[in-house]
Length: 251
Image (tube, rainbow, N blue to C red; front, top):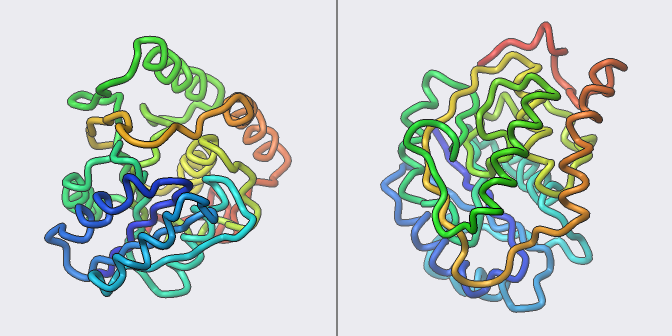
């Protein structure tokens, strides 16, 4: 099974070297890593190019003039499908996600189609967050579940592994979210398709270098997204390109 870890970046030069080395040194056969950089002015892409001399399976896409987490992941997913990867990870560049957890995800992939790293299941958690941010994240997930009936504890998690069949079922070009609401959207689509979803506990560690990309626009998008998805479902307009929600068969 070929594995691709997709990591979006914007101004992560202080973190990317450590993240790349920790991912690429994992004991995983046929492991590749793709950095999707949003034309960072801090030299992130240049640092990745330097690392490519050390890691043959390290890939780089620079999206000039483009910005946004969701579109970066969509670009990475299209790369993964075109290159024929079997399993595709989402992962942050800033050290919040522990690369040592990657093998634990893979252990679950023979029984599931989407495995989500969860802060809010038994054994999961968050470190180095102020109490206010922890409350915001927790209640945001409660809100998403209440509106959408999504049976996932951590609806906004950005650490996960997909079977390629999940991504093939999505109309990637029609996915609308570009901030953290992207996670809500893809989780909802996978659930509506009937794919087998599981959560495993992770410890999320706040970044030590660089700055968070969270802003009010991203927060507003996350508030609106659950209602947008319900509207799309009612109008049979969910961005699913494969079989519809009732007919989609898990791989």
